[in-house]
Image (cartoon, rainbow, N blue to C red; front, side):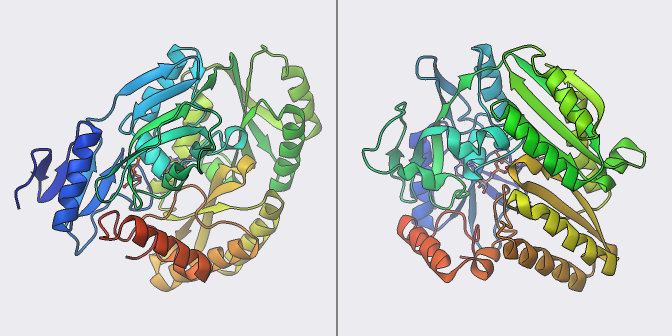
Length: 421
Ligand SMILES: Cc1cc2nc3c(=O)[nH]c(=O)nc-3n(C[C@H](O)[C@H](O)[C@H](O)COP(=O)(O)OP(=O)(O)OC[C@H]3O[C@@H](n4cnc5c(N)ncnc54)[C@H](O)[C@@H]3O)c2cc1C
């Protein structure tokens, strides 16, 4: 086969570096003709083997490193138009330079790209207040599996001239189409950010405090993160209870501080640290350290769980009972309590396959019995591609498979992602 100039061979891997949408379309047409499996690459920070070569397939990776331009910032519509290879950090910097704000943030913002973020429907540290990334998109440009370019770009707030078909590309991990451009909704930047690092005795107290804060500061409460005692103790190098990171965004300086302090006092919360508008925040650095520690200490069996807030207490009671009886499992939990999503990680003594299976079955069954989700914000990729068939309804499985067959009849996009091809 005659390989187009945009595609390079690197250590036996085929990687394309398109500079524009037309080149993406040509690459897709070429793949279509030669039966290649396309794997788009953003910053490759996904946690579910979404950008890993698929065995027994001829894979073609598409890097968006040369499609990394901010095309327009429209201050009237509050819309930013970008190519899909732009990093999340660059989007934040550009928005801030115009006194605006893009309300989605995750730790690896300097590496991850907007194309990857949309394809995983990223949540993150401010989902509590602002929702997931799908809530901040106004339009997309997408290359379909036969190379057709669908231009769904739009700056209109109201447009029901047909349903918003671009929504199916949010969270579909590149199996329905390849995102090349996006319109993002921006917001005016709030002037003051106050971050608290707090210590609290129990999960129950943390939930009660959250409900009170949410009631009083709904529009301002942007993050409510929890760290359970085991990771807290390792992080702070001393025996610890639960810790919370609470962040308030507002336009009035210190207006809430007195009120907040009273609420913390009433709820027996110890204030460990308060930060104002800090660029190099000690508190958020500690939050990032949790992930590194988790890796270093082998808490590497990860469950990304969402539950209705009212069910977390029940879930943790059952987990504690389970780990007491099965001492080969040690938990390491932290996450976004305010939006109901915790990262439930475990160390498994001796790493026996039998034990790993017992643990997974237990967590999945328990989560689903409590009306939760077993893939809250990280998606499924190839790592969890058996879960839809096993745990979703037959109707859901048939629907997604039929949709895939319609959108990608030759099966060129993302083999084995979301479900087994
Ligand atoms: C330290 C750390 C913290 C994280 N925190 C969070 C968090 O708080 N919340 C959260 O939701 N997630 C979090 N994540 C995971 C998150 O999903 C990813 O980090 C991010 O969204 C992926 O962006 P990326 O550019 O790296 O995409 P990649 O990893 O490169 O790709 C992700 C998926 O999208 C596909 N893809 C990439 N670009 C395109 C495109 N242009 N068109 C179609 N498909 C495409 C890829 O093939 C792959 O399947 C975290 C990850 C890390 C490592």
